[in-house]
Amino acid sequence: MTRSTPIAELRIVFAGTPEFACPALQTLIHAAPPVAVLTQPDRPAGRGRHVIASPVKQHATAAAIPVYQPNSLKRPEALDMLQQLAPDLIITAAYGLLLPPAVLQLPRLGCWNLHASLLPRWRGASPIQQAVLAGDAETGVTLMQMDRGLDTGPMLLARAIPIGRTETAGELHDRLALLAAEILTDALDRLGRGNLPAAIPQDSTAATHAPLIAKHDGQIDWHQDADQIARQIRAFNPWPVACGEIEHQSIRIFRAEAEPEARHERAPGTLITAAGSPDRIRIACGRGVLRLDQLQAPGRKRVSAAEWLNAHPGWRG
Image (cartoon, rainbow, N blue to C red; front, side, top):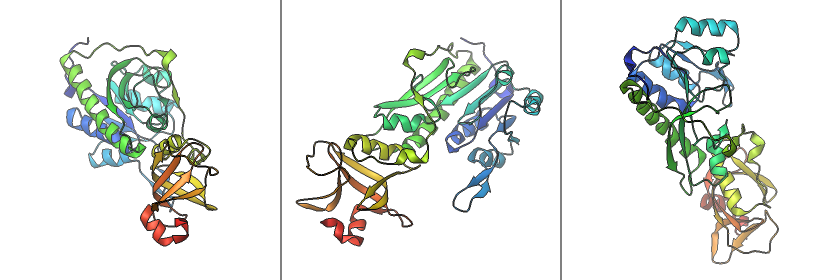
């Protein structure tokens, strides 16, 4: 249990970068406007590689909150800046930079982090994608008290949600972002009333790691089971998007459904036109068959299976 703390009187610094952090920042703005926001430096993005501000910076600027964008928090000038802000609490959500010990020790109430998994499962940079890829039935958001490790700190609050059978990582991301905001609202309310529970240490023996995703992770190996490939497609939508070789061309696949019990005698990666279902795109896998529902050829727009077959009648067999 904690002492009651008037939330409106707290000096809070928020640190975040991508869209995931914006609902939590908005919650904080309504409850106790932060004295400053930290976010990563502006970087090139998109096909034109134009330099753009992070979603968090755009959100903070619109709310007239001072924004700081250090390349590192380990440099003396970054620590000096934070010391001048004199935060009582630092709250992070997908910030992308580790907080060094000197920063962790600075706020009297410590540093909180909103992490998109049920810790200690999926510590690291890609918890949402890894939960989908692994076929987890549920995931959630954990609010933890930060320590020197990567997502290793003791847990304050956690809330779980089920993962939909056909849900993509992008769809799950949006639900978890809203859940993170709800948990932060709850935590600030509990802190204000003095009944925030004591942090519970994580069971490190149950920890799993979610490494940073690379573009090549989306490459499909048709020798895998159809179920696993379907999860890969969901996990890497919207980025990097799963990609597989079909009929001698590289195809990006956004939506697909596994038929794990379907039997065939084809080589993995072979296009199958099933008897009685000529309007379906089906690919032989190491076990089972994968039905493609939404796909894209290089340089072309994303289309449904029906639209693809209308443009590629040879795929009907």
